[in-house]
Image (cartoon, rainbow, N blue to C red; front, side, top):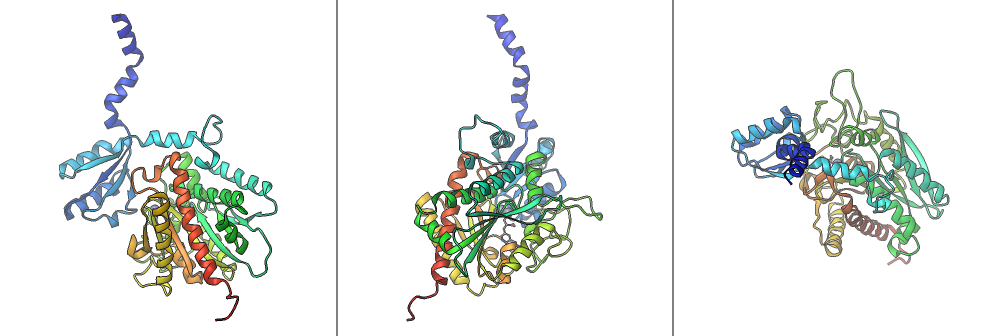
Length: 429
Ligand code: 9B3
Ligand code: ZN
Ligand code: ZN
């Protein structure tokens, strides 16, 4: 018996040691709420000086009193960071004790694993898989799906847009949806795939999607930032920006949602290349931004609705984010997101905030929705999908279907409203 026990202990020594040490040696996500201006300043310092990744807010600049900060702390800075917090009597909670386990769960579930029980659309997919899926989707639906190459990324990966078109009615209008502007927001590309699959499956059986597709073409860009997305699969799950490099700095990447020409690089963006909200050298300096902007400029007469999909925090936003001024059709846009949020509440019992970007999250210039709005696309939206911080960017695959269905309901609600408003009246009043 004793021998058996000794044998057991020896066999599991590594595991036992690891568990005993786990609070010191593992990556963690902490939730910290600074109570005083001093604590705010300490926290700003900690998140910039040590190797950490801010989840919320997006940049130290936005850290303020009595508002939760979500901070990813890698194992090697764990001790120093906690020390600093302790020394200034800043309390923290562990939001995620083992983010690595979550990360591993979400990556091994890719289609290379045939044992995976959930369906293709309830898993996250590598960039290679998504390219493969784009190709196959077009081949399987040659009459409705076209693939358009709109440009390429900094690292020369193709930017493919899927065009869904069920008929050739003259003067057809269109809707645009882009996903994956920010690399770590994995639920976003998952939504674009979900939307395409839903549209192809339920055209003719669901009356809302049928009406939408009968009356408009849909352009879908599943991964706006393929270099960043690829990087989150191979190297750093927390990466946000693209992967462009510049002679004048060692820091990599531009925040593509600060690189559009809408009050570019004013308050709410940074001209520092090492910042997570770096606006780039000039508006549309990045090939990804330029490809999207060129495509929308050349289709601005037909595109009526613009959607950009992000995560996390559950918000339905519309212009402006780049100024506190109200958009010309503010009340119309507010009405639409309000209806969408109410429907989500009723169907899925989940709460989404809504409003203009600047009033609802923060003042932020250079975003794609504001730029599209200024271009003349008067129904322009940014969605922040699930969740509200429980898992943050590491939303487990088991939550994909609910998160996507909520967003789908919001897209359908808004698209139908726009369709209704813009139908030429059949009989004059
Ligand atoms: C930011 C801007 Cl600049 C915008 N126009 N609309 C939404 C946002 C929020 C996203 C961001 O880029 O910070 C959330 Se991840
Ligand atoms: Zn984002
Ligand atoms: Zn976000």
